[in-house]
Image 1 (cartoon, one colour):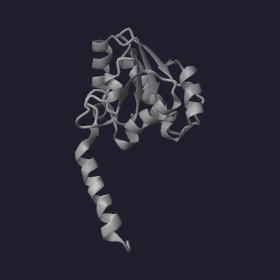
Image 2 (image 1 turned 135 degrees about the horizontal axis):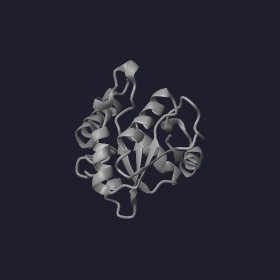
Image 3 (image 1 turned 135 degrees about the vertical axis):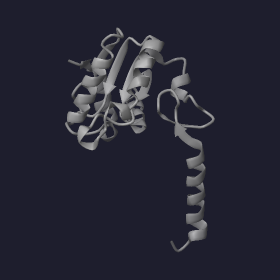
Image 4 (image 1 turned 120 degrees about the vertical axis):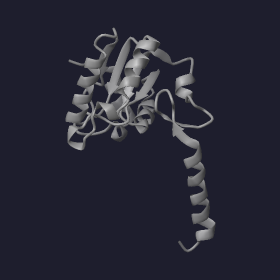
Length: 169
């Protein structure tokens, strides 16, 4: 605060630039910049398009990517089902998920959401809405601590959880 002109002003300017350029990918919902939409993860031809990893928030993608264990594509829901907080299916990107699975011929959907009650409800709902698509629905192995989010897990735990994933239901 003593050097507002030297420190605070450039920070405010940088935040204004970021607010104008940073957005969510139109395809997967990850963080990207406006001139790279769809994002690099969606346009990378070396990624496996037959596996789709569903996460709650864009930051979860960064955590999973840091593990180096997943080479498929992503889909961000924008949260999880939480009736107590009035977060129902209509507020999340479930319709887009079903559309992508059908359109892109996805064979496996890895549900990578929190391991709490709302996360379990979200995983169950995904399993139900994808039941007629032919896609296998799996979930991260339960190597993650209960009631914690993906963003709080270390890369090794995430890697083990991805490799040990199991079917939902």
